[in-house]
Length: 332
Image 1: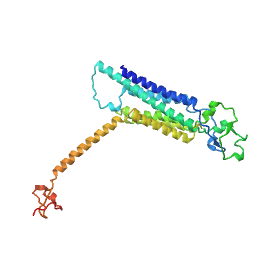
Image 2 (image 1 turned 180 degrees about the horizontal axis):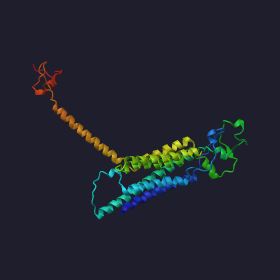
Image 3 (image 1 turned 60 degrees about the vertical axis):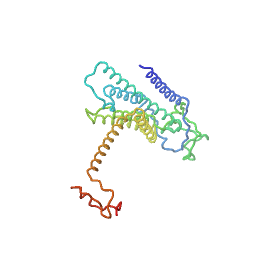
Image 4 (image 1 turned 45 degrees about the vertical axis):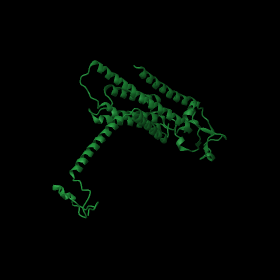
């Protein structure tokens, strides 16, 4: 390993550590914004189940396990589509084979690094939004049972429809639970799982060959997106998020997946250049065809004598001049 490669990997590691430190700092030292509520708000009166269909452990398996396995398997046995144009040799010596294997492991390292970078950015963006907005979760009333500053609660008729920010929870709620109740927007499950699955779908589009079965690749892509869709829907069904929280999480995760795939991993860079080259060839062929067609048509004379065009005999193409011409010059 050269010194330059080692330096680049050290810088990459520092950037990852920096992003992780930002995520930890947000969780430790940025409390969520305290947000008020309307008494009688039905969107905050859902029951608290205490369980989640997709818990944190299962989410980690989906977000880390599936992408790592897919990237490892695909990169170990195949190359990215932009390298297909390179010349393939049927026989290679030992040196070329070792270089080939090294290139495979380098691709695995790069692709996992790109994926983790986007995942960390998605987590940081989601955490900033959660703590800046401070939206209450749908089960807020069933857990907190808020008591207002005047000693009343939302059961009193005079409080219905009014907005309150000064309240305390009657039930014994820990500080951690209070903070968790105020971080509904956006859905962290939705943003992270959609980032992971959309990124894998984009990765498979350029990395997985379709020589065996074209439908297999698209089925895998569909399955990944549907898994993310199911996880997002469970957040609404479990009453942990409002539907708008899930929607914004989906859009955020998909956006980060596209940005990382397009501008960091550069999945479609080779395809764009290929299509541009093909378009250039088409333009060249079109230009040659137009030039040949133009040369087949006789060139009109630039000047005339008097009011009668000076036409020479052009053989079979003489009829092409059977049209009106302007008198550009007069010779007496």
